[in-house]
Length: 87
Image (cartoon, rainbow, N blue to C red):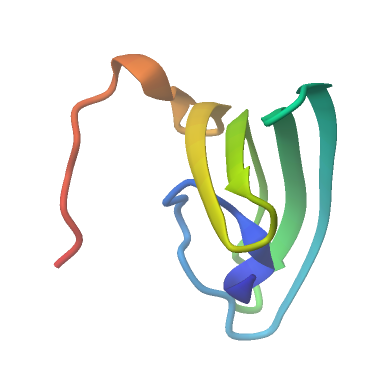
């Protein structure tokens, strides 16, 4: 759960001063969960931000094989966004 435990690729990706987050999850039915993450990030003297994401988690083998489907974050509605690769 590095960098605050966010499941989406949010901007900014890293914090060089401090990062505080709250991660929550609740069960809907058997293997289906919903999750939400919120956090504050401090990057430099003047730059800071509020980050959040939410979505659905499918837990096939508890704490070993889980698939996350981000739905909404501060990037917007993630279901309709194009897939991009990290460089």
